[in-house]
Length: 510
View 1: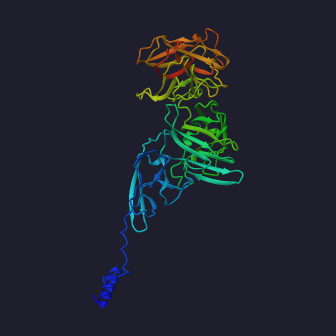
View 2: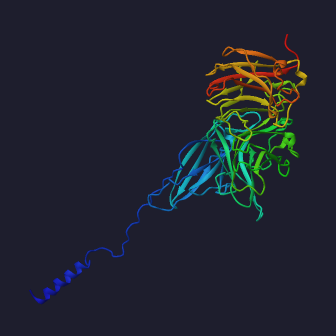
View 3: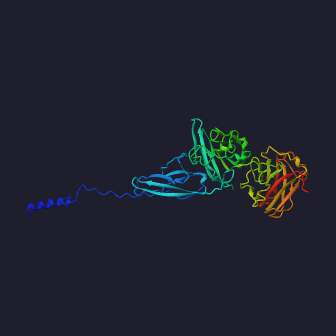
């Protein structure tokens, strides 16, 4: 091979090895990959309670390309619900993966649809989630029992740091890091169902838990006319969990700055439930025709840290539905008898009695419709377990007060009874009257046998109650007390009785 040909071959090899002569362009760009649209996930549908705050969670939304996502939540134009910020205050927009939604009690039985739109900066995707709000039947006078009555919006709170004088004028979310926090929970070891569980958490802060009317979110001057209950009472059940001896106060408001003078309440100090009944007349300065806060409840100012209590059955009760002073119960408690209560051998608390019938105690009771318009409401009493000494009774408002029943000395204690079940009892049913705190009682009257499931009217001459001389008829605390006889465990178990028309009469029937 000639030298010229050799150099030509080497040149050709160099050109091929370096890409020379290939015809390609060294500066040509690789095409960018196509963008993949994100996927939106607004969470799972659920059934929720009105008057509560629920979490929104779009964190399951994703982007295949790994792009950072932005979020935008929105409500159907017809929906009545409100977005909340992390501190429980209202916010018009919600632009984070998670958030909170206030569902007013007025939406009971409705569906609320929430939309979520996510974007990767180029494309968007959307999803919706629907929440079904539990039905809650409106009950005259009720604020809360198991659910918030639809004429009210639900809970909110207010608090202030009394050292820095910084104030939160109102927030609706109970699941925050604020001073006042709350949740709707099932009562522990109790048959009463759901209650509000409220805690006060920070040092140097004062605050209150309160219920507000429907529409309060949009108009702070919203109110409800409760003046038809003037002359009646504000009633609620209260359990102070810790410390059990915390001092608790309540008040009400009639569109700020109109508010009632706060007053202390005296619940049980052993951690058990108490029924608190406060005459509306005791709320000095309150205009009940403009009720903007029916109940504001809080521990003593300056001593709130780590206090926890539960509230249930918040309601307004009219003045007694009967005016006759001799009536103990006829559709409702009579004007001179304010409290239903019970005791049993297994009750361990300071007073020895319990004031709520809707519990898991041995003696349970409730007012119930009889099923007959003629008879109306009745009392249903049950003796449920192995305990002994279970007594159900109706007494005066406080254990320090009494009624003078001397005018009935020639008359009788009269009532209607219907024994639904005798259970394990074979010894019969007993009735008496008590001047309890002095240790004085009437004679115990064993009732004649009553046929199961039939109403019978019982008349006990007052003279029979006085035979033993143990009762001071001018100083009666419990005007009616009833229980299944027997002193062995289990003797009372399963007894169920209905009671109606309990009264004292000045004369015996002919």
